Amino acid sequence: MAGTDVTDTPPVVVLLGPPGAGKGTQARRLEERHGLVQLSTGDLLRAAVAQGTPAGLAARTVMEAGGLVSDEIVLAILKDRLAEPDTRAGVILDGFPRTAAQAEALDALLAEAGQAVDAAIALEVEDAAMVARVSGRFTCAGCGEGYHDAFKRPAAEGVCDVCSGDRFKRRADDTAETVRARLSAYHAETAPLIAFYDARGQLARVDAMGAIDDVTEALGALVAQARAA
Ligand code: AMP
Image (cartoon, rainbow, N blue to C red; front, side):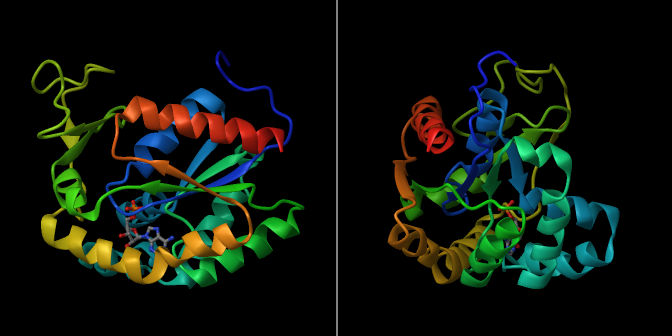
């Protein structure tokens, strides 16, 4: 694939950051440009909800309230996804781990396959900006390109810049009220993981308040480093 790094070892990279920090956008770009597989537990859970699986049914109310789905459900879903062969190209974990128990379970899961986390990257943002960022966002239903009511509208109103699709969707949990609950869950349960990976010498921090392209560039350099390590 053009622009893909030459693979030394398939890296496992964890992206940390609150809702609205740009984890999904950046993970998608790293997938396109660096050949890593984006593994988003939020996407996997939304698919389970849409399919009405038992896990989806159990997760739905918690997600709509902005809380964290149980470690048991999330781990089962992640384990199944990690067992699929495409993940051997290396993965970028987007939205996982979110609790200390998940971080420990991830280590154990990877160890079974002779792997380990190579790097954790914290996207640093200002909390105050996140409610506006998240509550205005929407995506193209066709290709998944992300947009925002205030910050990034399609060039032609109602038409996706990338695939010319004309259907867009909004996440049910992207309301101002739910974003506040999600931010609280992040600070209570997930932010401590920054110290966890820092103590292991695996943490890098990236200022994610700036331009999307600048953040992608900084992340790309860190992924290349993780590959070479
Ligand atoms: P996200 O797409 O990452 O913003 O996740 C959307 C929602 O899915 C979160 O607000 C949680 O309710 C749930 N979720 C996603 N990933 C996890 C996880 N690793 N642990 C617990 N809940 C999660």
